[in-house]
Length: 223
Image 1 (cartoon, rainbow, N blue to C red):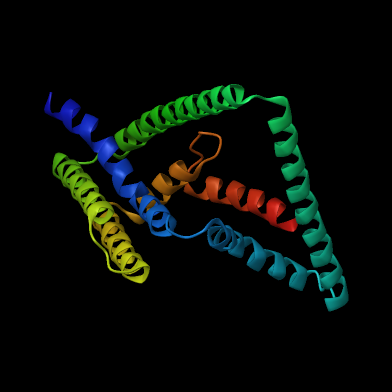
Image 2 (tube, helix red, strand yellow; image 1 turned 90 degrees about the vertical axis):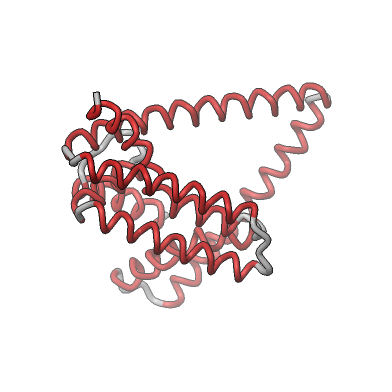
């Protein structure tokens, strides 16, 4: 009975410890405008693209032409989206738009719930494969409670500036990362991260998943 109870508590605890840095990063950036977040998200792709062009020995003139083409493409896509939104507004009445927005939110929440449930089941299987002792399971459960308390305090706290909030988030990320490092092996952490970042919902193991994820990123950034 004791083993069953600690297993039930451990997977959510481990999931909370693992995703805390992601949640904290999202909270830290929530006060920024979309333009800033957009460019932060693009930076790794831009760096990878430059490295790709360097390796292919693409000259500066060709790089400029490629960048101009990318800019034209982005502007064309933005214009098409604006035209599409305008056309939808002409076709749909106010009540219809509200009904669609409501249906969209409901479906999005349903998908999120399904993904959370699937992730929880996969995390349960991963935790079972580790065969952790009860003491370590209990430590992870306590870490989960501490993480939730810290995140709630940051959300509700009166932080003087955006910079102060970012610094607080950074300290929490480091603290929670240290918790993982203390309680789990490097291989366990790698497998857990591979599981959390898997797109298709399947766990490929740390090495296999990192390889497939890197290939996906290469294709996106090269476009």
